[in-house]
Image 1 (cartoon, one colour):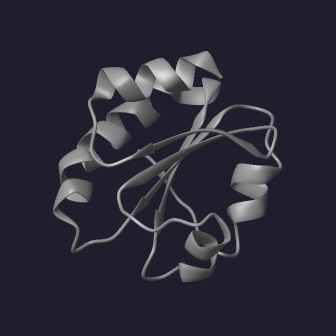
Image 2 (cartoon, helix red, strand yellow):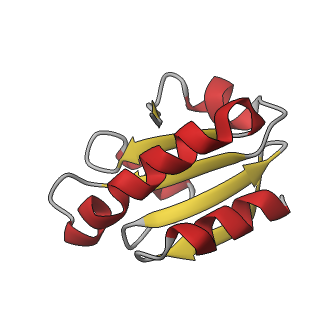
Image 3 (tube, rainbow, N blue to C red):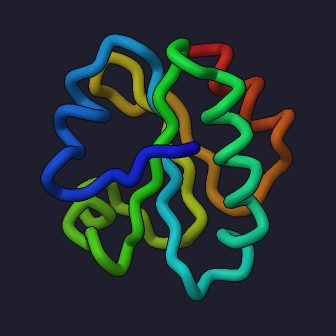
Length: 104
């Protein structure tokens, strides 16, 4: 299961960790976000301790979305050592997401 990322835990869960992090920027009303939600949870389970996988609700955490210029959802940001190393905008396949996550 993916982590719920909030304003309060973003720095500790995403920026201050040594493992790769996938952050899904989403909203409950977004159709494509609902399509990839089960994929994001599967990836979180499969990666285990090798990576963190979290979700940011852009309606609840608009400051984080603004900080990273998230204009469309779903947006997937891949972090390594606190820095963005890759981005996917829009719904995509599990294989494509896993390939990017394994590269970092």
